[in-house]
Length: 153
Image (cartoon, rainbow, N blue to C red; front, side, top):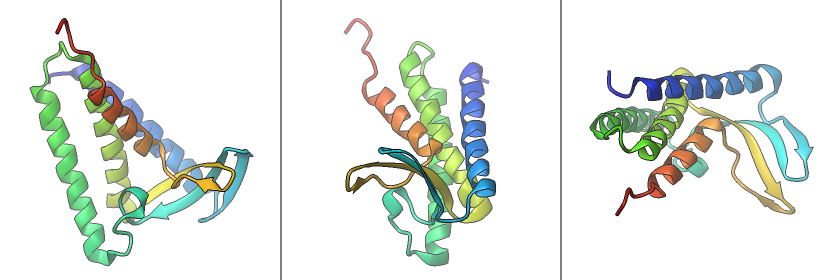
């Protein structure tokens, strides 16, 4: 299998995502929040939608639609990684971070019908939507791909 080491990264990231989600599922009541500092709280929520709760009112059709999209995106990223040369290390890291995040949230959708969120960032009266490690991996992956260094160009 091409890019074997990157798949180990993928496994470690997905396991860390699922481990942290399990902590919140077993230690917090739904909706419970714990203030860590003026900018961070742990808040256990279920997101039945996509990013920023888009399509959260989609019911059963929305649930299966988002599950299907998650599966297709994960398969597409796997295909994309296999087409990427080992010379593009930053791009590959980005792709595998992206895949890890997509797959972590896919597991939630398949097992629970929603994504488990718990990272709650805020400053004064501004609150960012609550998210999880998988969402962070997606962000990091996209950033790595967008800002990939061009070799001697």
